[in-house]
Length: 144
Image (cartoon, rainbow, N blue to C red; front, side, top):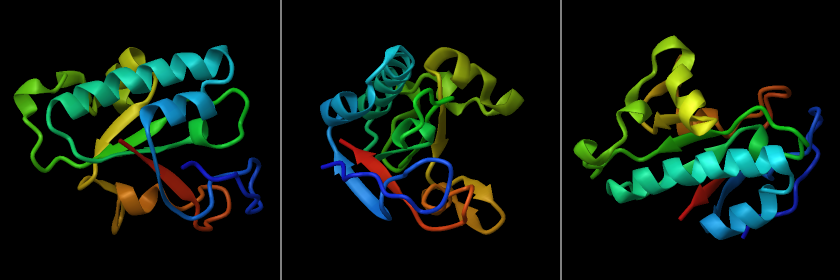
């Protein structure tokens, strides 16, 4: 279940701290609420289906798409690479060149393996749970 957004002092309300489980349909209902958000959801959905089709067992959704920003710029994802058949992955999901330009163009967002370094000393799962405006803890969604 996706909880109510909370104010932690940044420009937009965010998910409360923690990892919140949700189905793909729950994400659609909650966040695909205007044309821009529908476009982003469709890109996320396509990437999610590629990842899960390749055996991914954990996809974590983050970014302005999961806060209250009316017109989010994109979405951010980190995913568990353990057990994933890379031959079944879209090569674009492994292309991090040019600031992940190919990912953004094809899917509308960015996909990072969970074990990649997001910042010095921080992997993406941890990095995504810190608000970039306030530095305070915030939540993300585990989509299944």
